[in-house]
Length: 216
Image (cartoon, rainbow, N blue to C red; front, top):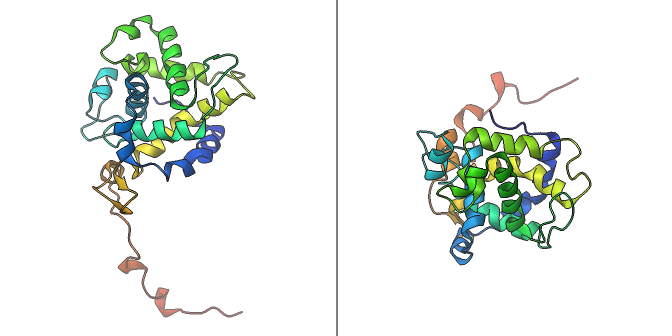
């Protein structure tokens, strides 16, 4: 079972969603940070499993593509780098790291606490090497009452599950900002059976039973 999505998490994610609108997938190749990317891909696979290597590693897959194939990992890296440009310093995570690096560090630090063997897996990020149950435990610990309350770290933690799921179902991975168009059908559209943008549908045209006005 995925960790519960709280109202606080929804509000936290909403605060950084506008940054996603500026995400350009072409930027992904310009920021080669494997441990960060692996951690965020592990997060995307956790929230929206697919048939990728990260989902296989956690032991929870899908017959369709998921968050990793949707490009959620690089998009999340961009959003967190823009939303948190300053180093995170302070208890309980004295990281001195900004943005996505701080997010990855938090996930990896708790992953090692949950399962020290996660440091030896195939991915550069310990969080990505955990089983699905291990990732659940990571989030259980991160959701403990009082953890980092009133600090920037609390803000980061509150956005993780909600924003990762949101990005996985968004168009971020295939939106060409320069041309202002999609380059492919988004994974989120396919797995949710979304039919795409429409200006209207036949069943909503006209008036119900010919009534076109209301009177007292």
